[in-house]
Length: 214
Image (spheres, rainbow, N blue to C red):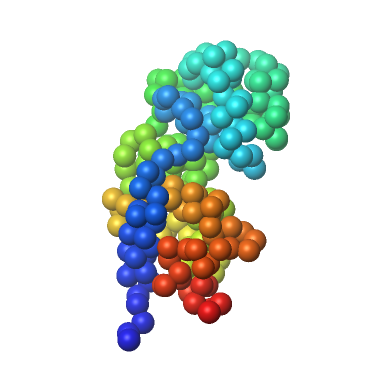
């Protein structure tokens, strides 16, 4: 039997995860683009569950970028303290709100290039916003994505930007954003960092890591 190509394996992974996790949704709770941007910034080195506990009070106090742009950083710190790295995150949130208000007329930018000019916003967050808010092809490279796509055999690196472009070449652009959401769900439930449950994995038949253990 001929060895399947990386692109064929990627297509197989997309279909397997689509069947396993039909609802490919972001686990952060938000109601508008600004809230998603802030929630994703808060999620750095913090669980989505914790962020979802913190954001209701934050957005009640500062519901828009304009409101948040006028906030005292110390007030934001008090509201997000349990998220960790709260001083840096609070400073970034206020600064990005000022940039959105002053540079983009209060609208959240719709390109990765513009989003990454905002304080504290890297390519992972920018891809999430571009994909979930604006419906454009996106590849969100988080810790689950790095780990699982490495195990699948798509790369053996840790550089998130390089991995993003490797996956852009392999994935159907119409599937890439949902695929990354499903990787998060799969990474939490099955393909964990320690002791992955390969025998329960929907991708075990074609995953290079799984085959190596059989």
